[in-house]
Length: 271
Image (tube, rainbow, N blue to C red):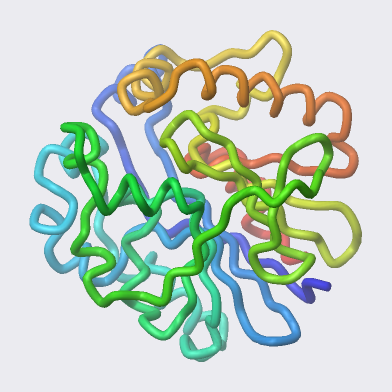
């Protein structure tokens, strides 16, 4: 059973479209989870890392940094926040990534000893970088330290109607959610007091996309289309997330990676 869950934002992004409120929000986050378990700490996503802060253009690409308005701050890195919470970074034994985009995997190198759990299709796509979009979204420099990869595929277990696979025991599950990328996954984390968080990564960008009918600002809607690898699967999985939220919202708190409102509502809460 997870003993404690912390909500961390390991990046701040201020896209230019956010200057016009009708187009999109002025602030995006990189919502990560730090899970305290009996055998150490588990990170769900990492945001930007210390090396990204030191050389954002070289690690992430100048176009990416400018387009998302990335604000580089060492204090927001996962390793700095782990220390600020009173933990030793070496206690982070496992990292579970929703996918390997640069704003989700930048902190891997700050925990080089950690096992990195990822969907096998995601790792294969990130390594191959065979399409133009792959070359801009994946930065091999972020895993040049050759981490211990733990590759997962869905194993037939069911979790609220979704396929799932154990990532770190029975309390942290990888839930395939293809669409944004070919190996994109959500991560389900059991809450100490009962119920679950489902970190849906980039399965959606805006909290009102969980509602029926959904709503999303134009700039974020366009960004999702621009970054998608499988449109049919992305839209189908968003629909499944809406069904989950509607039918099981009392048991499963669905969150995404970038909605600042969702993060702010949970940041002061430690499960």
